Amino acid sequence: MFEIDNRIYDRSGMARALVDMLEPTRNFFVGKRSGFSFGSFSAQYSPQATFLEGWSRILWGVGPFLAGGFDWEHIGEFLEGLKTGPDKDDGYFWGEPKDWDQRFVEMAAIAFSFILCRERTWDMLDERERKNMYEWLDHINNRNFCQNNWVCFRVMVNLAFEYLGLPFREDLIRQDMDLVDSFYSSDGWYRDVVPYDMYNPWAIQYYTLIYYKLRKDKGRQRCERIRERTLLFAKQYACFFNESGGCVPYGRSLTYRFAQAGYFSAAAYAGIEVLPWGAMKRIVLGNLRWWLSQPIFDNAGILTVGYRYQTNIMADQYNSPGSPYWAFKIFLVLALGEEHPFWTSEERSLNNSKSTCLPVLSGILVHTDDDDVVFLNNGQNPTSRSCQLVDKYAKFAYSIHSGFTTTVGGHDLQNQGGDNTLMFSEVGEDYFRPKDVTLKKWCRPDMLKNTWRPFKDVDVTTWMIPAGDWHVRIHRIDSPRKLDCVEGGFAIRKYEGNGPECEPEVFGDMSISYPWGYSAIFSITEGRKGFIHAPMSNTNLMYPSVFVPALRCQVEKGTTYIAAVVGSGNDPEMLSSAPKVVMGEANDSVIINGKVFKLF
Image (tube, rainbow, N blue to C red; front, side, top):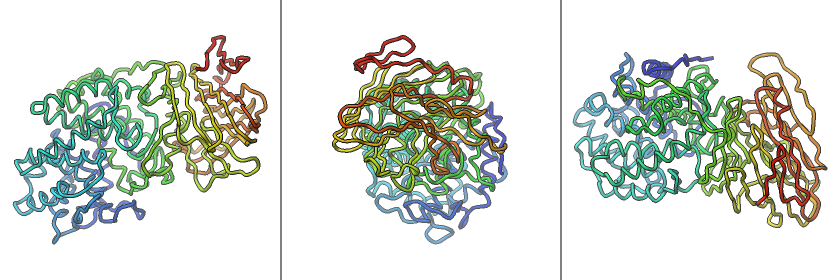
């Protein structure tokens, strides 16, 4: 198994890690080093575009590496594609970009490399090669493409043209940035046609910070808005990270892994101290250290599609073998000199609050005593076509330690991910429907509330209340008929590394305990029976094999209340810390450790 040194505490250590990841890719060049072939599967675009994708995304690391004054004996190999890729008659041609083309996505890294390190990229091209490159990139100014975060790629190309003294489209820069402004919501958050998630920090937020860096003296009004928004956003986004460098997995594009911290690299590059420099450094380097201690590479040293390990089940339809190298966006801080305060500052604790309310996302982040972060989630309604959307956006809770589990194969119970969701089936049918669309939602610092329908004539209202390292879930179910009902807690891994197999301890309504941790869901209403749910292999983001503690019951016709205490952790002794919870007599309140919470 390929391993990499994850002791990254300074600028040179980060550069060394980049080189260690670049070295294995040298074995997979195609054509005249203008693409990579990392695997036999593909995405929704052509093999030609797939080969380009892997190659271009390497530049997110190579560009800052060269801009920062670093060098490596083989670095020139990664730049040869700049000569051969846009040439229709030589080497491996990248292909003629058409409307809605994946190639537009990959243009951003190429264009940015010309800005970051012109002398090692653009200036090495001869007159014919520059003409080829300009004409190939300029297709983005004459084609239709997605009116979402993709417009940022066209901005990047035109900013590069401007920097190089080439004809560029100022009108399109203004038009595209106006559209980006229309994506802004509030409290620093952007969204386009998909929900708020972890993708936007390394997409829209990332590119607006580069725009700020390059145009803060030219477009001052827009850049001031960018600065104000990113200062609002950073304090919230930092709460998704734990002290060990992990980040809560939520939403699409999770195979980009340590791009999670790329936003803070972009903020540092832009010169905006969105958090104290030492905290920004802790997030960036800590996140990279965390990821490089996980089994994310194959035996040849290539980043795999997956999350903590290789699995295509959770991938999006636009993930090809080269897609994970967008993770290299984290390396933008290498462009900063060693005298920059990002590098001269000592890493410092994030000091995140125990509980943080995020009104824009309609959720609450809870930092546990064992360094987990749990995102309690009212749910969102993705409208774009993508894979596993319900699992990525609609579960009640997401966690660094437990990740989340996806559903495969069908609607019968054995194929359900089952963690942190409530599922319903017609009695005896074994056709389970989890929560999907959130109809309405309310968010307070101490409580979440949402309404949804598993069937068109069944209404469910769900409340979630943080309770220390645990949380309480209450569901009101209004149904015209009997239904089978299953609710799951957090997933827990079945095996610890390569050690011997270990049988779990199971007790209570349902808790699963191993020497390395526990997961529990305790019912606080009568009539539910506990059981162990075993999702299909390789469906959990964190571990190939997991169990999920679950509760089963039958919901009667009319109005039914069910409630549970849910928690997980690394220390089985902490099972005894579960809060004491009692439902109020009229089911309009809940008492948690003696404190009354009115269900609004």
